Image 1 (cartoon, helix red, strand yellow):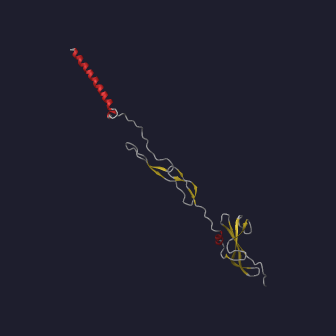
Image 2: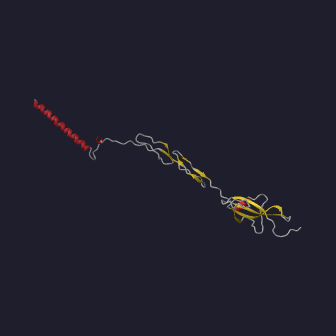
Image 3: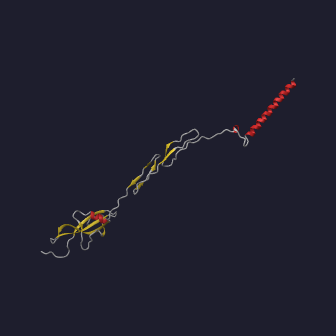
Length: 212
């Protein structure tokens, strides 16, 4: 009787070992190349995903941040503002600076106006009653520059260019008692090209005798 028990136990142990070996062999074969199945998958680990952000360079702002959508982050909504510039023709006195949300500090200045032609300024600056004239030795326009003068009889600033021309003006009586209307006009133009002042001098006859 004991012999039969021994045989049963021995047979059971042998069959168990064979079953284990067969299972192990099947597992190895099933995970081989071309024989993989779901039992061969290893544990998958992934590092946390950082949320994407907008650029921090000058001009960029974030309209909407990235959102987690279950398997990843959505793209953030970004906006770019180009730096402003002065209007065409203006002078930039200070550049725009980015303060994190907008451009600030842009300084613009219109250029200084350019002076008209000196002859135009001189004629426009004549007092009422004076017009361009014609005399011997003087031209009927402001095209006869004289010299650079300082503090002189005309009272023009130093460094101005003085132009002279013939003028007709209000009548005056000469030393001979004759009504005259001839003048010499002087026009001062500053180094910057602008009118500084004008003067008119009576032109007295220098020849001939008075008849009494």
